Length: 231
Image 1 (cartoon, rainbow, N blue to C red):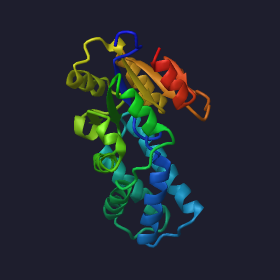
Image 2: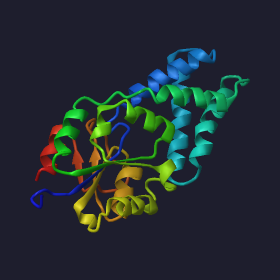
Image 3: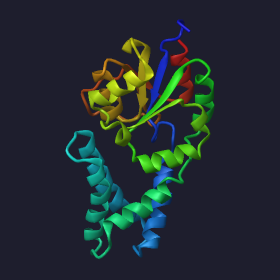
């Protein structure tokens, strides 16, 4: 369909199509309750702050994923007084997170429409156990013939090698015919641009861009994204 802007759409998963915030909240609450931590806003905020810092370090290649998922609970538990097994905490949390298949409003409708005209892939840095579980429960599983999870690929966004692996598997011969769509300016947008793809920043909240990264386009909504992709 040469009249379309692109042939290949490479969608980030969390907070682009999947409602990760809701899935995380439900998984975290169940984990705190199961391990006897206070189930309150301050405790949740502490975990999220630690988790956010470590994922940011992952984006810049400063920590490995297998270290991150345990270290976040190790740091959290130390601040909370210690005594819990961070590996057990992580296992329980990921099992609960894998059940969180909530999509952002309009995501399924958008993907069903786009799947008729584009070849689509999910490209995610999320933990494979959680991402596979969530996708298997989601109606999106039938719409994405390609799923690339950095833990399985061996490289992570924004590394060029991750997107090279995607290009090879999907036989993308002209990077100008592919676009990365995601909410993270570093892993999605900078990663896509570095690989020679266009990159659309999905930013429905109208967040400011504090970086020097310049997206190809900024999508304020799914409806605007659909109109842009169609040409």
